[in-house]
Image 1 (cartoon, rainbow, N blue to C red):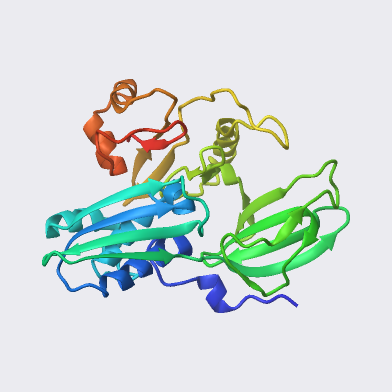
Image 2: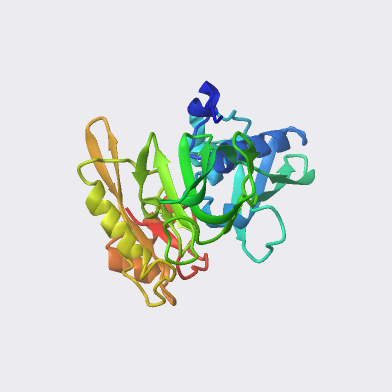
Length: 316
């Protein structure tokens, strides 16, 4: 019999959207800075796998920088890590490494240098994961399917499997194989049925994740019942989906999905641009009617950074 404890529902006490990409990353850096004599002069982070693809959207960069300055996982100052590091005179950099793949997807190398010139490099892995809530068979629906509850309350559903490799109430980690794809239940061909649900409400994954670019669409997603249908339709269009098994190879619109942030009754529009092959920061800035400096500031990048096709850049 599956059960949910109050701790599974509440999740960890943390700042940020992901237990593995924010809280876990923060703890790695927090422990790393304890290994070298203070004060720190510089910290350089090399990110691998999923960290390399989503470190800005998931707030991994803020979390790592906050941890290296000694902030705890629930410290609200993590949101302002960049400004605080600058005020403290702490140099830092974030370098994604997508070439090395034979390691855990949530891996970071932290090179630290203190004021005395001592240098130390530490590697950490944030395992993340969740608890398997349901492992069942439904002949007229999902067939063999699995439901996993994550630490932030989100549930992910995997349907039409040929084989389930986990049991109910089993703890699983990011990257662990939980089942094999198949054609069980009400299905017309071998595929994976994937859903994201929060509090029983099914949400279009494309609103939160760009499957082709392997990156998130923003720092967070705010659900609005009145605008959800239109947002979902637009997100699916931008995803480039043609049918249940293939994706469009042609260029889709580079007008990326927008998220709205509401604070104290004021609504700010947050907009993103998907980089095309050959585009430069200067060309993107002119197209969007903003400055290169603004794009760099919003994305914490330099003017000389090389852009890659499919990269997501915030411009407002």
